[in-house]
Length: 445
Image 1 (tube, rainbow, N blue to C red):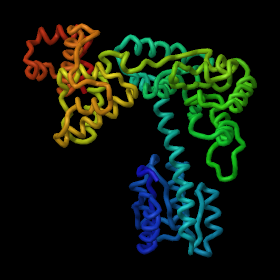
Image 2: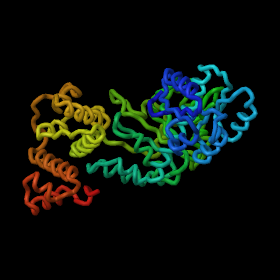
Image 3: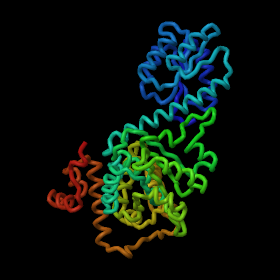
Image 4: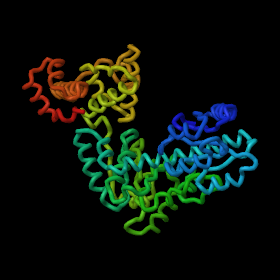
């Protein structure tokens, strides 16, 4: 189980709570124990990242009172009740109040593990949906994540705001790692469906039969999900890797789209990676389906086409990782900045993000260089770079902008500190910041 999901075990009997904790820990869960409901309530907030296992019979606040307090704070929190033989009627009442399930002593440990897996899976879905709703409640938050000053990114942001207001289905194209799913989130947040269901499904993650069930049903016994078409009704359904759909699934999807009418009740955002050997999404889909899904289209630009955005993104990423790891961010030399700009970036922003993390970890250890990282990720990169194909003046200006931006960010907008570090008089610094579109207010706070 992922480490973020916890299990809070509440029992006044020390041996019982320790044995449950040990068993669940051996099953891969992250556990924490409490000797009383009162102690547990100090830790269990509305967004507790896990589930609760509690005894019913406890001194002070008993399990039923505890359950009522938990349900009043967060009615979606899964609570598994442990009962004695004579407490089954009480356990049934607990289920009515919102308990996830109950176990009667002596219980089978494997049954405990099975219930814990189901409960944590349910909890994860709830917390993910809750987090997504918070993000989507503020479209501006998502737009701020689509950072960049390249003309292609400015056009993308404008197109998202325009297409977000439309009703038609949207095809989002772009290479792997460019942020297409983030664009789908922003489209949803910018339109009238913001706040409604937002469902994402990868068409490449399942074989045909499973994908048909995940999309259209029927749901089998034990499944913890609704068919995506039903779950997304009235909102947005994002279909990633749309080009991976088989002919059978394409036909079924087309029928579903035809049944919805115009404008559609549910908006589909289809996401496609640019395909190799010159093939496109249009080549992979039947024409009638393609033109339904591609009534509106967006293309997310590759990183290599975004110019100095590369340096701006890299600077932000290394500062973020340096803060996360509690160490200094590595300084980028002029040669390394040139290499960052000239690298082909087949993995785009995701690849840049990964290299930034490795650069921070490498710098923390005091070993290696950014050049060596770049060469390991880009086999065709030469150790000595040239400025062929781009004037030297542009490289100098790009590096100068990155250096001022980085220094202003580190000093949180302190002009005097930046002047001292870069040995620049105030007038020169002001002129350069105006030239590169840098504003002191962006760095304060």
